[in-house]
Image (cartoon, rainbow, N blue to C red; front, top):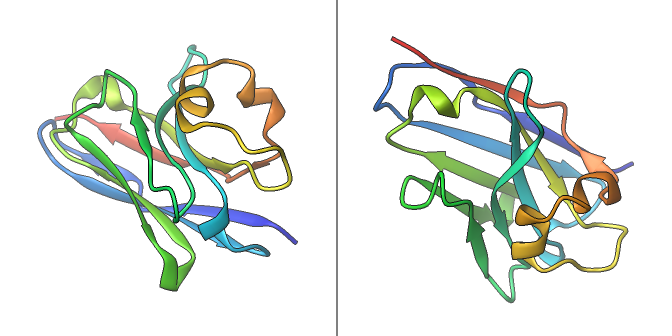
Length: 134
């Protein structure tokens, strides 16, 4: 059974850092693109950072997080991380990870930036709440 589990969310002050983890079971993440999305109250889900397969390594970041967030893999743990630095109140949201496992491969720029993958991708984690507030 394919499962994605996010962890690492919490409350942090503006300017602080958090690292989110997306641990997978039921498949090997190395071979699939993984995306981090977020959804703030009253807003649509948006892609923030996506990473291609281990052999490719391409990454994509939304303009709003470029230079502050970093997506990476730990292949020994079948986990993808999202390191978030210089957090701002507008980063407050529930963060989800997803993968194109079971689907035709998607370029990471498309996975993150286009609207259609959000309905197309089947596997999503339960979400991790990140609150940036003083």
